[in-house]
Image (tube, rainbow, N blue to C red):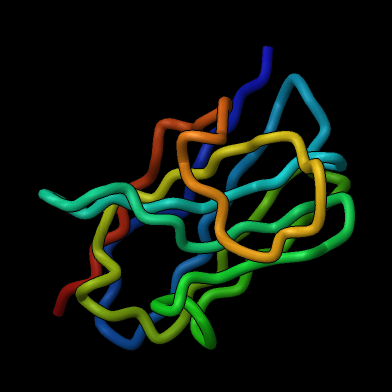
Length: 127
């Protein structure tokens, strides 16, 4: 059974950093796209960053470019989202999701394409 479990969220001051983790079990991440999404209160689910582990192609939302970095620990079958220079508007529940990678990522894939989801981790950026 494919499972994704996020961790690493918390309360951080503006300008601070957090690293979110997404641990996969029941399948290997080698041939999957891992997407990080977030949903703030009253707002729609937003794609933040996605990477195809087959070829390393990745995409970032404009709001994440230059501040967020997606990476992977193959041995731990875990994906990470390093978030730096955090802003109050980054406050949201962050989810990781997985879908089989069928080609190079050239633009963000919408959330409806992802069949496997974690339960999310809360990130709050506030002073």
